[in-house]
Image (cartoon, rainbow, N blue to C red; front, side, top):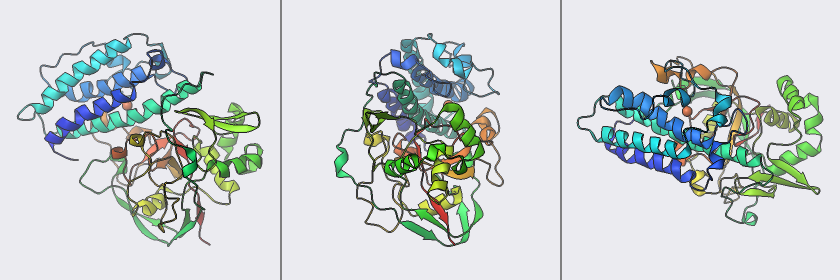
Amino acid sequence: MPRDDRRLTDRYPAVRAATEKLCESLAEEDCIVQSMPDVSPTKWHLAHVTWFFETFILRPYSSDYRQMDPRYEFLFNSYYEAVGQQYPRPRRGLLTRPSLREVYAYRAHVDEAMVELLRSDPGPSPDLPDLVELGIQHEQQHQELILMDIKHVYSSTPMFPVYRGRGEPRTDRVVPPLRWLEAPAGIRSVGYDGDGFCFDNERPRHDEYVAAFRLASRPATNGEFLAFLEDGGYDRSDLWLSDGWARSREEGWTEPLYWLRRGGEWFEFTLGGLVPLDLDAPVCHLSLYEADAFATWSGGRLPTEAEWESAALAVPIDGNFVEDGILHPRPPASGGRGGAGPVQMFGDVWEWTRSAYAPYPGFRPPAGAVGEYNGKFMCNQQVLRGGCCVTPRSHVRTTYRNFFYPHCRWQFAGVRLARDLD
Ligand SMILES: [Fe+2]
């Protein structure tokens, strides 16, 4: 991890300001709603990321730090058992107090102490830069969550509010034809081995054997997914994983989350409001189960993590990220015809893989409470790669492993097909 304290003195206030900027256009009412147990109110996110700095940095490393309210330790602890008990996640929408104003005051209180600590000379501990870096990366993760969650909150009212985004016309971008990129069999090195920051779950770098495969040059589009839907894809049990079929029946899935049919036309709810479905844009808000059924229907499969990462190695980390302000996946700018490699590996949509979220060989979570950050979730979830249109650009790496339960649909998740080479 970087050990440049001066950079942290700049980056800490920048990441905190970026979070608050995302919330500028929200009404107070927007910030307290929890539309489902997976969604957290914006107010809770704003407080929880602050709690993270308070708990893991200020309290252990700043001798004169005083908590603004000791009750926050319980209210805003997400899942850290080593820290103590947590307020139940599905009830976060009931937290009318502290008020939003008090949460912003809590942020200011912690920011003042953090800036003072980061400027102190000499630095209080050699561990501090790594922890601050982790706190910054954690806050970036919650920036994405704030947008995912507010989209779900807004989708829950027939008013279909507009957050912002989709500021450009749809007509200037046309989806390129899908090409199949062949990759030979071989040993691939997977995982992070650089000098910069990475999460513990990206290490250790290790070798994996990958059989020859084909990877789609781009993610699947709304138009392609619509063909699956119109072919009865949601009604054909033969296409679905057993758990997926059960979940689909139980929850009555008949289209991707946020798709809506009105008067024979398809629309989708976006952070820019309800808009006609763009058939050329990458399909989004799929569960793993829908992505897998679509892949089976297409005669393909989902790529593995190792396949995805080896294909992404030569691809620059560029694409449609939160800074672009579009806040929705879109077709590639150039039509993707210029190069021979894959397009849209980064940004637009997280891409489901067929790889279970499991520890890499030799993985050991760090000691202490921060060891609970990733390791304890390595069961029953599935890996997604590449970042999406609401991910901060500087947050993504080629080796980045996102993970969600297979039934989750509210994250910006799409699908890139793979095929065995026979
Ligand atoms: Fe968190």
